[in-house]
Length: 118
Image 1 (cartoon, helix red, strand yellow):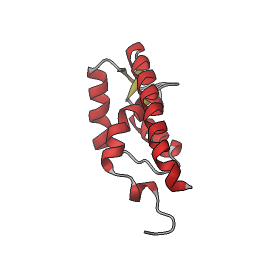
Image 2 (cartoon, rainbow, N blue to C red):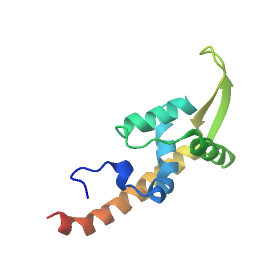
Image 3 (tube, helix red, strand yellow):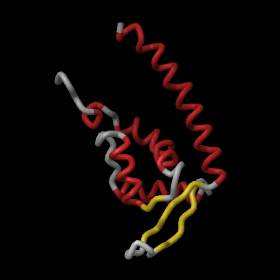
Image 4 (cartoon, one colour):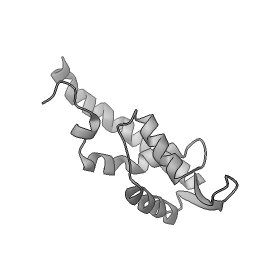
């Protein structure tokens, strides 16, 4: 193992896939965004460690929209027609539950890792 491996090298795709809904909803928590801005927020928020491709992002956004967790609207005020996504009240409640679940899970994992860290 290299002295300093990046998350990209050590993170299992299943880990990201299992948490992508949480990350996407969190990204939309403060403001609506179109697809590229969502990708950029994930990259910047993770310091370049999470890079979600459009082929992964848009099907999940459509799934979230079908579940009424996000809603979308078309807008061309930026000079280009873009589909903007924003959280619905149901999406905000779901985000809150996912955050609570994540916190419980990460605390549990931390308890297991603490002895190994020293």
